[in-house]
Length: 217
Image (tube, rainbow, N blue to C red):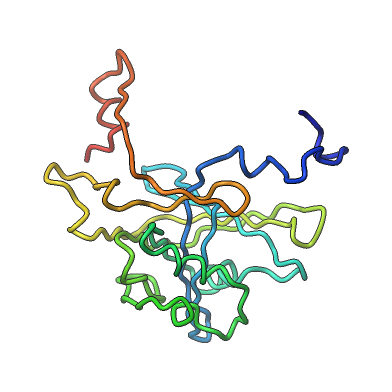
């Protein structure tokens, strides 16, 4: 099976595009509007960019009617957004927060999660989440789509403060990923979570490279 998405109809009943780039980490992002309304929404097009300084990005498609996502608008207007780790235990709340609600509705309340104060960002963190990044907004890069929903805005931020629950830190100072069970997006309506891991080290890597790859501080 092969086809050109620019000029040919997909020969499968469901597009394979999103099902190939998997698993995708979820950016469960909280913001607050300039009028004080809290917003919470998951983005499966989320990634870290670099580590010195730590920077992240997320991509937000417009709504089908052409409106921009509240998360993007809030980040631009307030200068901040917060990443909350989405986990298997919080999957139902993550899913509820994906609903398209009016800008005046508080998604924290709809999703049934608790607000925790931030140190720098004007909005709130998800108290039940085990890890958070408070991110200073840097810029938005807007990419043209073939439809209203196809337009996408790539938002960049710098991580200014990191929070991790002590209960998910191992005795040697690493995150206990199997205990965290981070949630990830697959294709279609499918998700997964991390419950297995294995280690591989690059043969011949220098001590400096090894420390960098492992994130040694």
